Length: 426
Image 1 (tube, rainbow, N blue to C red):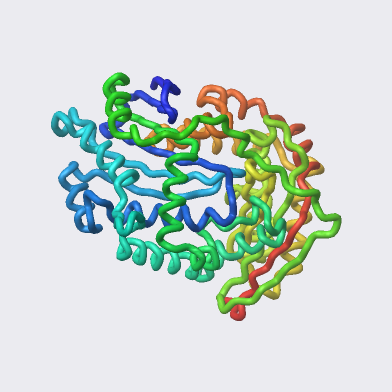
Image 2: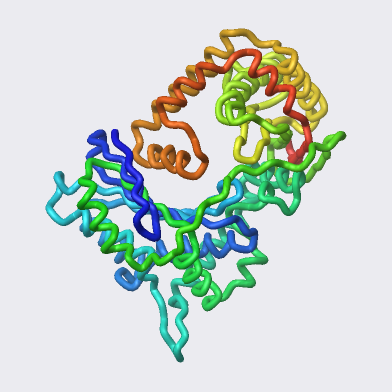
C-alpha cells in the first residue's frame, strides 16, 4: 500500500494505491469551521444533492445510472469532527480492468455531477434549487430531526451533552435543528452551496489499484470548478470547560420500557499519547466488553442494568458511560459506576486486562485494512487529526502501561449525570 498527497491545486488529492480491492473508492470532503446554524443547511445540501441533479432529474434516473455503471455505490453525509463540520460524498465502483475501458472516468464524472450539477431553476436573473427537489429534501430532513426522540439512546446522549456544556461545540446536534430548517429558504440554501464551493477546505481521497497520472488527470478535468483559496486547517480537538465540583443531575421522562442512564466525565489536559492510546485502554478495561469492570459489577454481579459500556471521545476530551436500567435502580447503578471509576484510579485492574485491551485495539485496527472506506477514514485522520500511521499505532499501543492508565484515571472527573426515565420498566 502506497500513499501520496498532491497539493498543487485548490484542493488536496490523497492517493492510496493498493491491489487489495477490486474496487476504486473516491471520497470528496468539504470542511469548514463548525457553526451551529450551518449544520442544518449542510444536511439539507447532502439530501438535495444526492436526490437529483441536472443530469439525473429523479432518484430513479440516478438508480438507472448506477446500474449502467456496474452497480456503482454512492452516498453523502454531513458530520461533526471536533471544531469542524465535514460534508462528504463518495462513490465505490469496480476497477475498469474488471469492466470496460473508460469506466473510471465515467464513475468519477458521476460523482462530480452529484456535487457540481444540482437540479436548479433560473428565473429573473436568480438561481435557486428546483422546488420539488428542495421540498423533498426539506421533508426528509424534517422527518429525520423530529424522529430523533424515537431513538432513546441517541436522544439521551444528545441531552446529556447539551446539559454538560450548553451552546458549545460539544453540545451541537449533528442532524440539525428544526428552528434553523424553518429559517432556510431555497435561495438562502443556494447561496450557502456557492459559499461551500468557494470557501470550504476540500480533500479528495482515492483508494484502489489506480495509475497516479491517470487519476490526477481525471480529477482535474472533473473538479476544475473548485476555486477555493487553500488555507491551513486548525486543530479539530477541543477542550471542555472546567469540570463541575458537584455533578449536574438532569432527568427527563419518556414513554419507554427502559430508562437510559448516561454519566458524562470531563478529562483534564491529556497528553497526545494519552488521548490517542491510553484512553482506548482505559475505556476498554472500564466498560469495553463482557470482561470489563462495569459489565461484571453492575450487570453480572448486581443485575442493575440491561447493558453498560464506556466510550472515550478524544476529540472533545470526555468519556461517557451508558447504561440501560430500571428506573428504581438509578441510585444503586450510579453508586456502583462511581465505585468502579474510583477503582481505576486506585489501579484495581491487572496486566491481563491491559493485554486484552491492546489485543482488541490491534484487531480493530487490522479490520480497517479490509474496508476501503475505513482506510480512507484512517488516512483522513492522519490529514485532519495528525493521527499516527498504521505501523506507529501498533507500536505505540503496546507501550501503554498500568501506570499510564492510573495516571489518566486521575484526570477523569464526573461532570454530568443524565437519566431518561421510562414510565414502564420491563
